[in-house]
Image 1 (cartoon, helix red, strand yellow):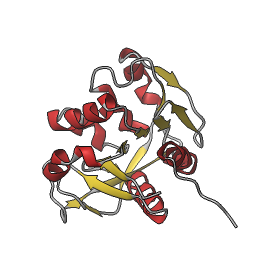
Image 2 (cartoon, helix red, strand yellow):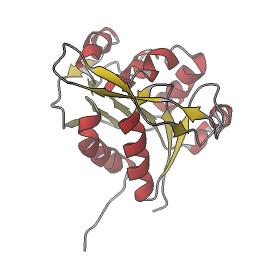
Image 3 (cartoon, helix red, strand yellow):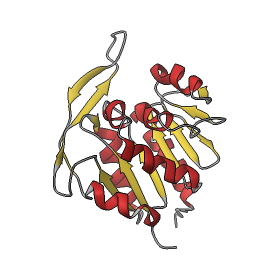
Length: 197
């Protein structure tokens, strides 16, 4: 089976691990991941953040490593039919890119075409900005996103930090500590089988 093409939606200060770990793992098994950000071109730099829980009432945020965008946003817009799935990485990027009408149109494409949608942590904020995407779905995300999921007509699933949840072709997880389970379920939805000899 040929590898699939996955569109990753990001913005400045998207969670570092949720970009790097996802991209590298998917590419290791033969899939292509295009990292895009509104108004950025292939070769531009994306600044990332690293969120952690260190005993405070909410997460802390540190500066992560820079990521090089590998696909021009406008090109991805014009080639949506070529992508098999969309991935909404978390962190702080989703809170502002979700208001971009072009990002909303991309998500709407994947929803209407019934293509797989992957979301982790704050990534669900991108999905709830498009009417109907989470309605009737069971979705995991960072706990702070529960009210938004509920108001958008979804059912928030309070997953453990290392679990992922699958509802049809939507895969979700609470945060980067669940990346192993999350990617395992994403691969199943993509039809990827890994065999050990």
